[in-house]
View 1 (cartoon, helix red, strand yellow):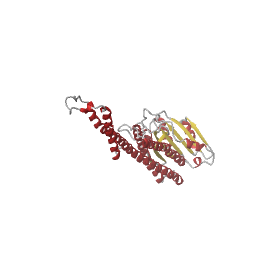
View 2 (cartoon, helix red, strand yellow):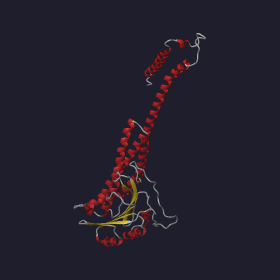
View 3 (cartoon, one colour):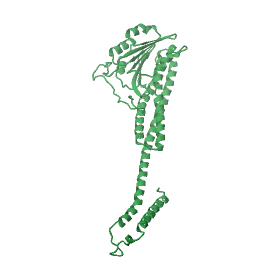
View 4 (cartoon, helix red, strand yellow):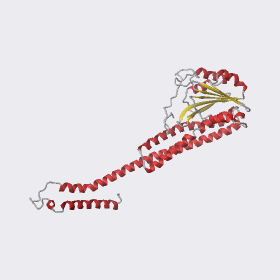
Length: 364
């Protein structure tokens, strides 16, 4: 969801594709893509090293000297840089094409010596801002491609920097890839939980007094839930495929951790489905409450109209211009000494009688 309010406003997702007839694997940069920057993290069981604003030369210098290398590329504007990264790590050109053409459906592809995972990532939890994240990993490397700055990987970086014993520094590249994918999955919990709290608050307000702005909030929340559903269901399939694979660079013990992330994704899907059902119910309840309130207003107005109808009739009759001296049938009440208070009393008796009748019929 593009940066906006807390209920999930988002910009329309535009999928970029190569020109019709272009050769497979053709990389074409998005004119709006951010400038590419590299962050190189070198990992061994004993130590680690992080190089910000790294260069290709630094990557070539350290690539073969460390047990695990994590290269994080932020921004997809520099096609030559992305192609060079693909050459160094022997990444498949079709996968690199999916990297620069953002808006891909979450998936996993296995190649001879590496895997390619595409997911939707929340890079700004407070703004609910999504982007595509591409993860390559093989025997001794992990390469991530992000569209822009901002990601949920800070806990992973802190774990890499933690003192020994440190599983992230000792279990290999597949475990590091698991940690990154798990961080992406877990980043969905805060916005879903925040939306659930907002839904509960709106429900409490509706039960007291329904307002028009609540309907707008409910529709925006349901739209946000649909976006989450569109990201989470393919994520589940992706994680299930990672668990079922039999490639050599994903160890059996790492599959156990991937299975835990799959459980997280299933839990997220359940939360989103429950939230969507609740939102649908609240929208229907809001419509019902609004209709009931309208019916109550119409009922009260009808009762008031019925009460005033005989009074208006009497006032209209007595307000006509009669001459009682011309005939005894020509409105003799006009000459009555207490005619005015008697008329008011009579009309009051009629009004009170109608109100008592309505209460007896339980219409009031």
